[in-house]
Each structure stands twice: as C-alpha cells, then as structure tokens.
Length: 150
Image (cartoon, rainbow, N blue to C red; front, side):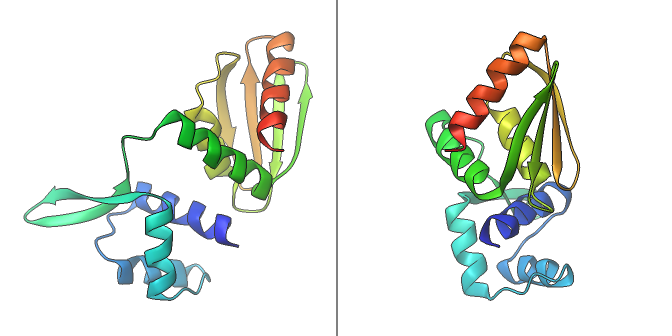
C-alpha cells in the first residue's frame, strides 16, 4: 500500500500543481487512498520531494532534480521487490507485470536507469512493456531487472 500510495503521489505531482500537504491528502482521498497529514509528511520526506517556485510567491511540491544514481538503484530495487510480480521476455520485448496501479512508477524508475539495451517503454496500469534493441539485449535487460528485484 505504501509503495502504491507513493507512486500515486509522484504521478499526481507530475500532472497537477500541489501546494500543500493538505491538498495532497485531499487528492489522494478523492482516489480512495485515505491518509493523514502525518503520513503525507513522511511520504514527502521519503520521496525527497522539494518545494519549487511557480511564480506569484507560490510554491509546489516536485521530485528533487538531483537524483543520485546510487539512490535511484536502491529505490528501484525496493520498488521492483514491492511491486513487480513477474519479469518475462519474448524476443526483443520485456514484459514486467506489477501490482495494479504501480506500472507507471515502475516504468519511470526503469527509464531512469537509462539501460543501453532498451529503446523505450510503455506503462499501463499493471504492465510495463520494454522494447529492447535486439533479442540478446532483451535477455541482458531481463537479467539486470531480475537481479535488481532480489
């Protein structure tokens, strides 16, 4: 639940201007994710969210831009362990099945790794499709992702 909630927070911040913790809690509540202000505060800290100016003396929450690769790898490992059900390949396609609602976050986390084997990704609700440069590249990417998920 925590991983799913945090994924949804990141998605909301990408699509909306969220100025306060209360506003974020309200948006989550509208989606059936009931949280307290204290929970939102902890999530903000764990996700390393920062307030950035939007003009007119107002600020919004956003993901920190200085995302360190080592920390990204650690977060990806946790995300894959918490959310991924299977990682399979078919020729040059890698299919990552996830818990419902977590595929967009998993897809973005995989994209942040900039794996040279991959051309691109598409995420639905519970599935991420990764397109590899070749069948061999798919084997390599699948192995790397499986190693990260353990």
